[in-house]
Figure 1 (cartoon, rainbow, N blue to C red):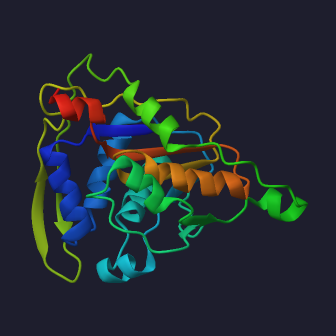
Figure 2: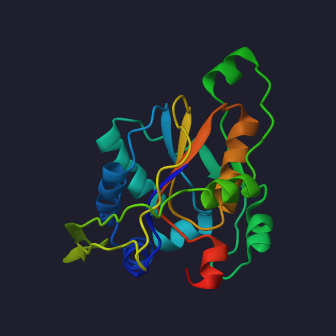
Length: 237
């Protein structure tokens, strides 16, 4: 599981424009920054974390899909947009506690089995990715050893017409903190989940559980930004 930057003010602003202001092509800028920071994984598919039907209709697009398409161009990996779906609508995770986030997305996803499982009748593997495992991996990163500053600028096209020039300033790490170092070993992963932000890991864990239950044996994830571990947020580190 890898992230390109910590969720500082600048990264938060970019994500806000991508998700809520219609700047869909910021997905290309975000993908370029991820590809610059995160080594190309060995995987079969990039799978964007899906939105619920109501949220997708309201927004008109999925920001995770925009990022995944940009990564597909840079990494040469196909995007499987329909492989993972949301079975039900969920609340916004923004104001929820870690426990509430986990409950909110539990069982919210469904996945298509891999071809070998469909053709050979292979039994699904038991789900084994939990939010606790995600949080343990999130807090174990070294991420403080060297400063990392990413700078990018792109002309983005607002959905529905019109153009606006957007600049992504450097120094996203904030508070002198180095960007999160890539974690884990994605070698041999069948699926790389793609999302904009990792906060507690509840959404990624629920999505991974659905994929693993459907028979995908190796699931990892990549996000643009990663929220500080709760212990650091509480102390202001």
